Image (cartoon, rainbow, N blue to C red; front, side):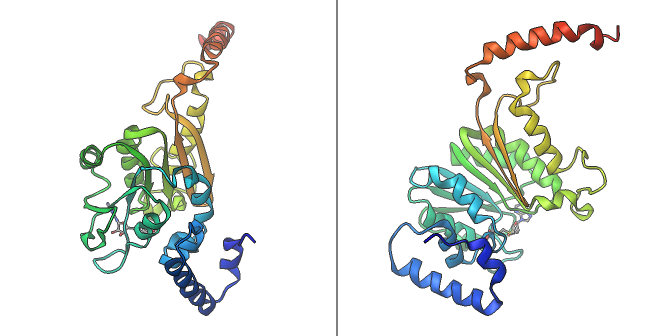
Length: 268
Ligand SMILES: C[S@@+](CC[C@H](N)C(=O)[O-])C[C@H]1O[C@@H](n2cnc3c(N)ncnc32)[C@H](O)[C@@H]1O
């Protein structure tokens, strides 16, 4: 029987949740089977479970589960030297072959473990991120669960998405900060250029950018395969639109479109 963890989460009291966590710990630690991501998340008490993100992670991460991928997560938690590491241990258990890299602005070296490497640095520092990616090697999964300030989310995406492998996934958590002024977001100007949701909206257009007349290319133009926006969390799949099988068809179509709209575009 499949368990609906999201529905469970909303119905349980604090005490019941604590009991569920200890049951999950007994099961996951005691029985060596490929447990669902939701069970593993409850076992390690990652807030990805309580936020309802794990069902989305499970859907998108399943193809990577048994592959020797590099996973980089920005934000090891919590906001100080104590605690944290819940998601690193969740990924360590879920992925059977992956190398897990955690980055935090605070020294979190104590979370280093088998297949877990811990790095310290600022996600807003693009040069640092570029150097870090160079040290890690090919990246197949990047998760931004860091400060959630919009300028940090944008800087990390701009530095790291170009370095993600084609076929890889870029995940941004806690997207609600896009609407919070205190985090550099806006709920009045939904096209505010400095917000993470505005970035995602423009990425949606990039999926079909070959059909947009006179579009100025951006660093992402060629590389957005799909954009999946859920409540507070988004998954961006990297592709290469030059592999698009009807690319020539798109070029012909756009040439016709430009010819047809030329008088309008020049104001005649
Ligand atoms: C929400 S917690 C991460 C939780 C963890 N990923 C999990 O699911 O268990 C956010 C973390 O981001 C870190 N952080 C805050 N600002 C940062 C920055 N500029 N660069 C890197 N990490 C940062 C904080 O120290 C904190 O540990």
